[in-house]
Every structure is written in C-alpha cells, then in structure tokens.
Length: 256
Image (cartoon, rainbow, N blue to C red; front, side, top):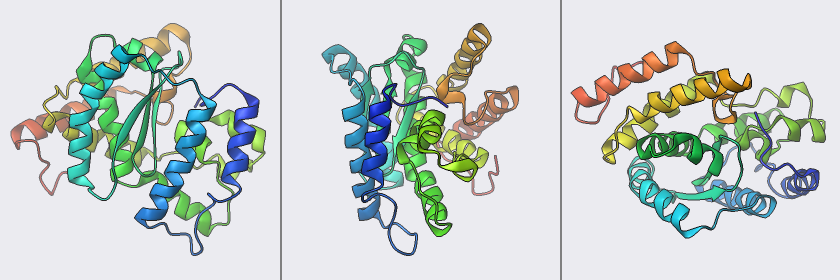
C-alpha cells in the first residue's frame, strides 16, 4: 500500500470531496450511472492531487497499448468507457476507479522497460477490476455497514490516507480480496491475450516485482494487495495454457 499523492493537503482535500457526496446512495447499492459519477469525482481529485505525465511520447506508447485492452474490457462490460492516464511518480503502481478510470505510474512503466506485453497485462488487470465491479462491491458492503469510505485510499492502496482520516481498523480491511486479485489476473490475461499481446507478460512482470522487492526489502505498491508468490505465478501460467488451448476463452468449469 502506498499513498497516491505525498501531499497531506491533497489527502485532506480528497477526504473533503468524498465526505460531500461520494459516500454512496441510500440502500448501499450503485447503479452504473452512480458508479460513473462517483468515479469521475474521484478521478478529478486524483488528477488535481498528482502530477500527470503529459509527455507526448509516453502517452503515445501507453495509449497504443491501452486502446486494444480497453476494447476487450468494453466487450466484457459495455456500459462503461475505459480511459488510461499516466501519473508521474517513481512508485511502481497502477490502479483503477469505478466507472473505467485507470491510472498507471511512470515508475511502473520504467520497471517494465520495453515489455509492452507486461504493461498490457497490468492494464488488463486494472480494467478487470472495473469489469467485475470489485471496488463497487466493497463500497456497497461498506455502505451497508455504515462505514465512511476513503475512495482514494482504497483504490490507490493507500495506508497513509486511512491514518490521516483515523477511519479505524474496520476500514483498513477494505482492500481487494485475494479472490478479487485472482479474478483480475484471470480476466486481465484474457483481455491481453485477445488484444493480441503476449499473456506471459504478466508472469514476467510478477518476476520484476519480486526482484524489486528483494532488492529494496519493500513491497512495490502494485503487489501489495496480494504478494507475488510462486503459487500466483504458477496459477497465471496455468490460466495462460487454458486460454491458448481454448482460443482465448475459459471453459465454464475453470475454477482457477
């Protein structure tokens, strides 16, 4: 978990925005319009609180990778549009917001090097969180429990935002579950494969993360929700074999 922006003022501003209209609808459930509106509000705060990378060459590369991934996500969930923007930061991180707003950090791009397939798999993973409504489901559950939710903290995997807001130990449990991460791996691989990318970019990037963790003795933010273990890499490799054997689809009985 890392902070989406290092500035304390940005956290407080984000919490102010979230406390004045983003806590969730009555009854605890979000329809698509509400999800998009909520995501748009948080995206605006994200972009105000961070330095966005507007370099034409960086954006040309990332958009060329993102467009086919977005198209695959759109086929899986057509009721939202998907956009990818770059945050200028050394952190090896990426995250998505409800409504299809996806952010990738320059630190992650640098860590991936020339491996466009690895970046495609990361973007596929983040789009999969939107397609499967993982964050929205957590928010709906939190609303039912009457919890104040720091959306920026949840979506960017930020511990510090929770500490500043003193939201308590219950709120700190509102991370993506292991099952959510596995499902995002699964669908992200499918999106990348069907978009024409090498799905082995995902296990390659997991190896990069593992090496970064060994070198720095700190977990890269993108890997913080679920550690990069040999089991996770093995599982991803098995899913790739299933995709290749079934023309880019998973049989209904796939329980990986």
